Length: 81
Image 1: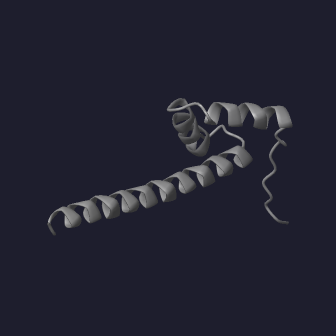
Image 2 (image 1 turned 45 degrees about the horizontal axis):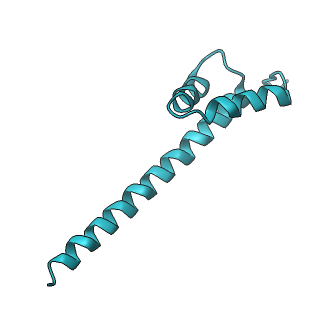
């Protein structure tokens, strides 16, 4: 017999509320961590929050890379005068 995990289906209202909360600056980030790593959370919401946090991390790394590149280009162009 397979060990299958079952979870309650989240309603449209649940998802609308979840998205609304996640859009609030600072509160949304904190709630993503709570939903992602909280032990009482629905596994579907937990996996969604983990995926969003991964995308935020990718975006942050891309932003830092872009920022360093632009600042480096500006510093290099000032030295060529």
